[in-house]
Length: 181
Image 1 (cartoon, helix red, strand yellow):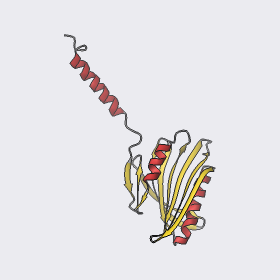
Image 2: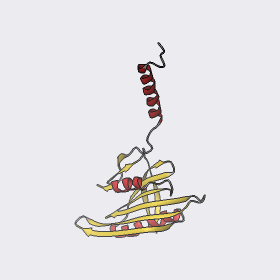
Image 3: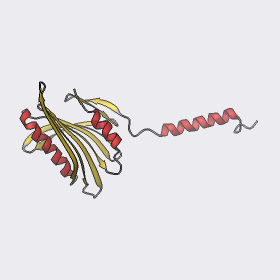
Image 4: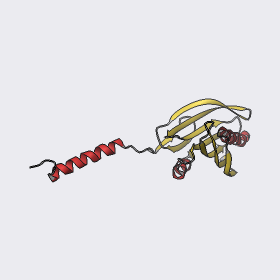
């Protein structure tokens, strides 16, 4: 009896080989829901995130922004959140965030859409952009940004990476998952 040609042994070897191959391959995008401890939002991120806070200057208004971000290859998925001193400054803060991020890639805005509303729950507005530019090293970058204000709270929900590697499906999954709680 030749063990290599026996159907049961062959099946076992094939199964073991497939198991080894499958265990070596892990999905790059392992979406998980993340709820912020610092601001009332939830979002899906493709990998385990890191969170840090730092001061930012948004056209003369200095705030502490908390960033929660994850990275897949060279593509960054991030949510920044902060509170402005009063709701009247929120729209200016959104514009300042948008401008700073586009400037970071020496970019040009390809498309932009803005909305604003006031209701029983207060003032809210949003800006959605797609921008392209280049890193200081000359690599082409694309930026998708969703900037949101809800009363005194402001958020930037962004995807940024090499234009040829960023999947619109992943951008849509990430940005549409952002929920203000």
